[in-house]
Length: 312
Image (cartoon, rainbow, N blue to C red; front, top):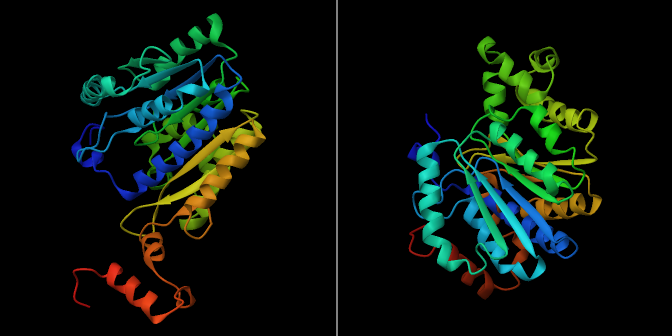
């Protein structure tokens, strides 16, 4: 299925949770880094469409509107939006043009650059620009692919050579575990993890053990090969059932950034367990515990709101 297939652009609960985490941390990152640096950079490596099929704005617009709200905290923010699918890129361009009048600091304090190409190819051009004068700019990379190709570990390592860079990465756990044993995908997986020993380490494992081994191996590579100081995963299940879909992985060399993201992730978890568990989370979010009600009237009010319009 193409990345522009409309089935992929339904705005589901797990995507909403991802965007909440992104927005909350970006707010912290922009206000903290913008105050002390004349220029900061935000990269959306798999930018996708400008909006979902029901009208919810995508991550590029989310970042731009937030930056516009926080423009008093920085002198200049450069936003790179990279999307290889032509249909998605056209929609992104259309929505950016439509929303431009609503972003008062567009091309004043917020510089927008977009590329209709593969992230792994464009990143070389971006590094060239950074070497020409942007090398010390604090940068935040949102890397959110639909699958597991197009994100070679070599690129991740190169991004993290700048100690003032942070990454928020969608690690597609379910698809990796599902297709790991296919021989025709071996090179892609070796590239993703940056090692040819992947199958030897995890292929004999099943279920939850394989899931844990995969995310732990990737984090091990980050720390031992890319030499990053901190990483933290947030487990995301499908909205329909308690099945791991992907992990949202925050990677940074900043202890303060690491601590802030952990707080945001914990607060976003219904059970404080650094996870969105799909239907379990939805049930717990609306379920009143026995001792939460202080009176019959309060319980009555809760039940009427909870089941309004329904016969139970």
